[in-house]
Length: 120
Image (tube, rainbow, N blue to C red; front, side, top):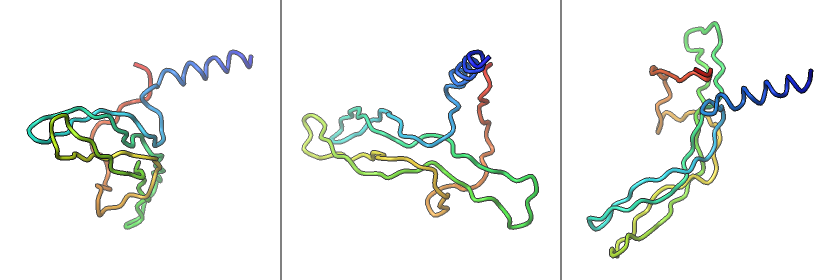
């Protein structure tokens, strides 16, 4: 019986590959431009969903604390071939779920469609 339960859990874990909660570094590529030339660089960004507890009852001004995926960032510098001007780009060193800062982020509700974690 334990083997069947473990197999079911592993199958469900693999079924929702894009639906993992948590905040984590993710590798991406982006384009930078200098001296009229464009070059592709590889960097790391923070990606993921932070667990949000949404109470059934909310009083006026009793909104839950919004948490967002954010990280510790550094700036890397590169040169495009044939261009003496350096180009800088951000790199996430680590990522965590932190309290939303309305000074630099939108902290309201997301009104778009959130993809389901259920297999289709």
